[in-house]
Image 1 (tube, rainbow, N blue to C red):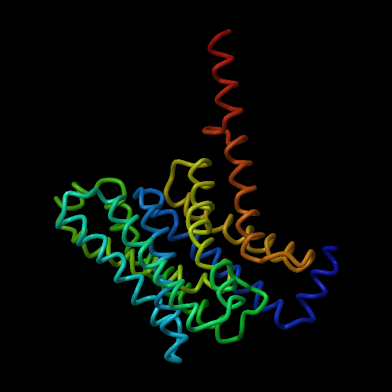
Image 2: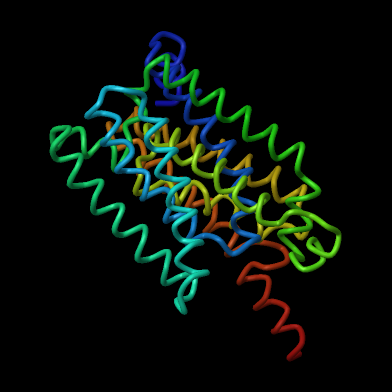
Length: 284
């Protein structure tokens, strides 16, 4: 089975595109997901990944690149959530729920006019085996830009993630850093549509980072581990998708969930089994 997959990668261009694109998505998602986890912004990631759907639909309807429409709606979502939170008594999670569900519903309606049910299924759940060369190049560019942003603003992202008040005291523009992170989060969510689909994007943003969080207390190590788990999940997911003719997005996400479950159980510092062992030793 593994040999068949290797032969397929060597011989079939579509599988090469699928594997490389998935690896790039796993890498970018793992890196930026680490900061989403630390900032407690999982719901925001979920909101943006769902709210880009109207942008995708409008792009299809008017014949321009889906990344433009999706990115515009992702940024609009982040701005609108911030506006509603600041201008009302509603808490952030409530504003997120209202905005993202409204945009997602609008996207489904627009997609029904623009595409067939089959295309809607691929947009929602992904179809990495149908990735084109242009999609691969786009994913590579976005991944490179995201990694460059994290590298340049690493210190600023680190301090604003752990202590926003101290960051303000140092004179950092926390609002700019927040919305810059939201912008690049949107880009990752957009290029992930072909791989895992809009519904499952949040899993790739959160699960590898959550797995890494259980294994280390150092941010740099967490980012490296999160990126590694994202890449491994992509490889394993594409392997099972190709070998058993399964939906690619679902297999990638399930592979990521398996890695999380292993860390949840066996992490030497935060795993359940380790904690139980410590409790037993204390009782003795």
